[in-house]
Image (tube, rainbow, N blue to C red):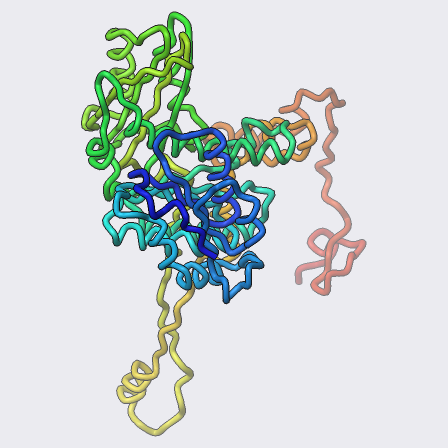
Length: 457
């Protein structure tokens, strides 16, 4: 099924494509919120999800492969389904398209496997292609997380810019919400990301940021982060930009070393002042470093009232500033030469040594076990939250002695534990008399100490 009824007309220059269940839910949420001058497309293997969506342009993926039943949490099935109907996806993108957002919830089948295929097709047509994806919540399981990591790595190869949103940050902020509300928050973050970038282009301002500016920042930029913040009051400029840098969209607010920053400042009934603009740009410049190029624009939106909104898109950053979805460094490998047992022969010793060298085998050992590596990746993606670290239920505490100084080590060795803990105990009395018991060579206890009672001669 490919419902392309609206794609024949002159469409918007910006398209938002939701791939799979997570991407489709996010696009449905964006559609209800409303983003100006943007067309929406959903692509899914699940025909039921397509039927209930309010989006008008729909593409059924893998109609013959999955028969409308979904990809079964298998990324390879999602990939093949997208390949099967990639021409229908291309038909949904009319000649006026300049920019495409490919959004998906990574970790399942259709989004994980299909999003890279669709992104590659968009990029090959010359569209500015931006991926906006989510990493699963930690409680969705290690298998789903592992699939998400692999899918994001593949998607990164086929987009100009990639924003990765870690759902676990949302859980940390809204952990007391119900499940449906938590997933709705995740969809809302995706919507904010797409809306923030799209409306920088589509909504005019006094100092306008157009498509060329966005393209300068995002074309072939690789990994990116985005933040948005709203504030009011006397210090609204400082508070809004600080909120933007602490947004759930960012896994880490360290943007030092960034190459390009796109900054959009929007005000409502109370217009932003030049001093406020100066304080915002100075704040961002100081955080990013003076090698970063900042392109900023100004807009007006009456619905903000006395609030000010700051949205920033940062590209050319270190991987440490985004969710650690990249694989850990390749496990160190060492090669050892093991000699085979030498065969007995009557040749000279020199001949034996030569033969021994020729019979040497190279055996490769992987020092890092796969299970340990997966656990390490999991901890990088999902470090324990402050709530987990301070939870009263976590009574078992394991001390880390790696940072102890030499003086601390001496204290541990020389001072008994009860004294370090200041426990009151009677002074122990020690007996220096040698024991008459000893242990024999066959590990039996003897009641006579041979060193004291037996004669040496």
